[in-house]
Image 1 (cartoon, rainbow, N blue to C red):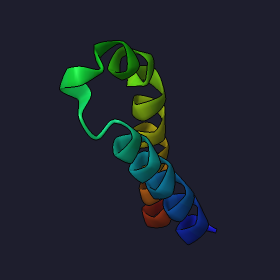
Image 2: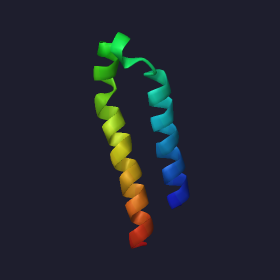
Image 3: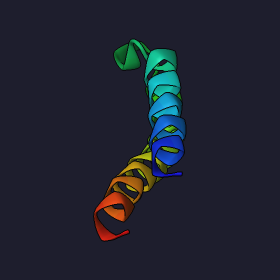
Image 4: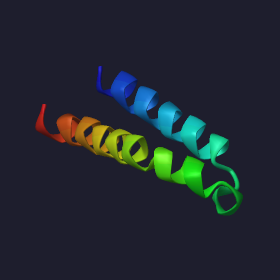
Length: 54
């Protein structure tokens, strides 16, 4: 289950960062994705931490 969480969150981050491949030319898009990126980073860190505590 932990591997699935890591895979899903990593895939979401990869997808968002590939969408934002050139953030300098898209400041509005970058601002719109700031909160979701941090949520997926937090989810990835929590999934990794759950592996240590389980």
